Picture 1 (spheres, rainbow, N blue to C red):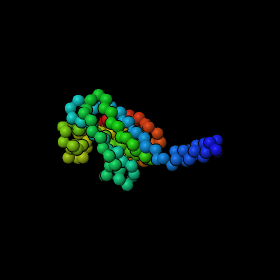
Picture 2 (cartoon, rainbow, N blue to C red; picture 1 turned 45 degrees about the vertical axis):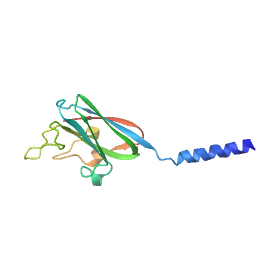
Picture 3 (cartoon, rainbow, N blue to C red; picture 1 turned 60 degrees about the vertical axis):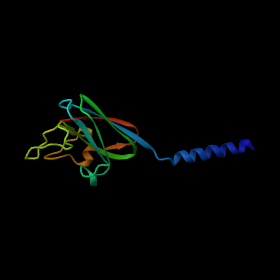
Length: 138
């Protein structure tokens, strides 16, 4: 009897493992902050429709030569990240009257836009495992 139940138990365990949703961590190493003042702020987006409007989650760490932001327990899928160095701690990316940023900023995949931010597709990465990326502030 014991040998008949063992294969059934193994099959049930394998089926249970197959239906478990996977969650991954995205680690972001941010380089080139202008100083150690203020914070480095990141916003994570999961769709083109919400890109730079409504983030899934944010992260903030004290500024330094290398800042690490970690986004935990994310389901597999596309994500894009916007990051900036908030030197004066006012919680926003400061810009001049023409709209040109005065503080350093960057995007995942070091994407660049023309006359504005890059499209979601240029900054997006497909998260399928725990992943570490680097964003260089400009």
